[in-house]
Amino acid sequence: MPLQLSLVPIEKPDPNLNLVLGQSHFIKSAEDIHEALVNAVPGIKFGLAFCEASGPRLVRTSGTDPDLVALAATNALAIGAGHTFIVLLGNAFPINVVNTILAVPEVVGLFCATANPVQVVVAESELGRGVLGVIDGQPPLGVEDDAAKAHRHDFLRKIGYKF
Image (cartoon, rainbow, N blue to C red; front, side):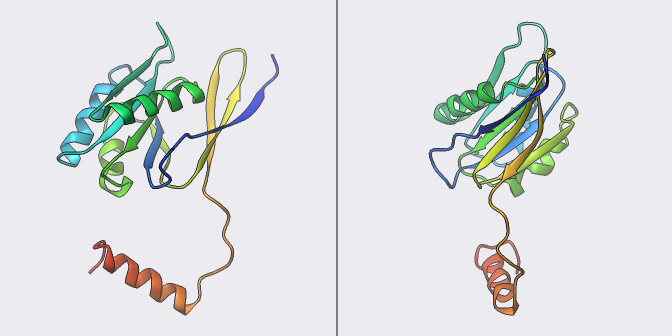
């Protein structure tokens, strides 16, 4: 079978819904990422899905919000690449959880953490499927000027990420 490439869009009914897409290496990833998330943000709402790469090769799920869990499972199944996971965040932002997820021993890396529209670049061979990368949002329209820098500066302070 020759290598085939495809683009898998991440389904997000709410354009403001944030996601984290990554790769891990062990079945206990679902439980460990779940524990990391609830410890990082009290009361967090999320859905998590992890694709097994061997054995029964199931999409393992967890989370605190049934709708987000179901949506994460749908997206993981569409990607269909072993050892990938997706987290959909309901009331948190990637900045609140990325370092916590990366500290989980099984996590080997992240492809993206964003609210932008995302397409996952998937390669398929006779062995299976793998994520080559992501297309995250749209290309730049130019370089920021002084007014855009001031807007960025003010915005970060308005939302409480800088003081």
